[in-house]
Length: 179
Image (cartoon, rainbow, N blue to C red):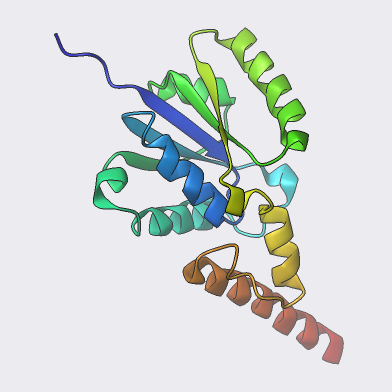
């Protein structure tokens, strides 16, 4: 008798996707048969990249993973409740990465709320690997905005996209200032 595939959803804004996110994605593929990386629209967070850009960036980063992992990953945008997105994708597991104790309280509350919405979907916490525990998209954006080197925290491809975004913003600001 063949068992059903275990589908997991790894949600986030991925603005931008960091080396820590990639680490969680790779590790999650060892736990689930199929992983859906859900890119949340979440305009309330004032993202640097549009949803479409973030989906494209995540897909491009996935292309550089080992073939075995890559084959089992899908990247999709969503703007619904996470539990609805999980059900729509046949997921029985939500994957959440934890970097520090400070993440735990928020994630614990979220897991509790999600369980009340749909108790058939479990939340699985993966601790960030030691070398990625301090990385956050917010810090990466701040470093990039101030012209710092973000390559220790994101791939060179993502670093280029961040630089292009901030260089374009600086050029627009300079043009407005000259007027």
